[in-house]
Image 1 (tube, rainbow, N blue to C red):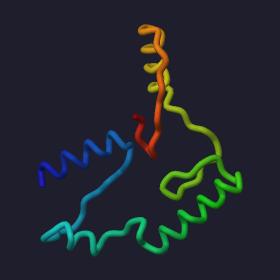
Image 2 (cartoon, helix red, strand yellow):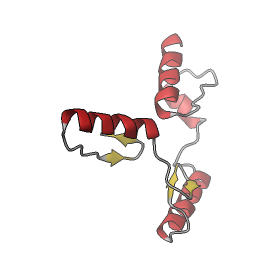
Image 3 (spheres, rainbow, N blue to C red):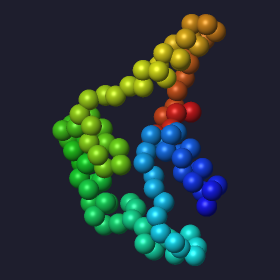
Image 4 (cartoon, rainbow, N blue to C red):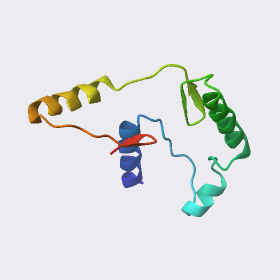
Length: 102
């Protein structure tokens, strides 16, 4: 359990989330039966509605079914990238997959 809590804490910091662990399950498979995710029909419907609003340009973007109406930039990340670009005199290409920058 100690290692699991460490991993959870690291993910919460890295992903800026509030992942929680609750329950006493004998296996991962058993825990999944009591969990909700994108396969849950309510969550799936909400996500579809949010995506439709983005496509209709009623919102700027969505993340995990939550709508955002203005761009949100990571100022610290942009500052560091600009600093590296200036220092190394290079062009920086960024590919974004969901939450993760590569």
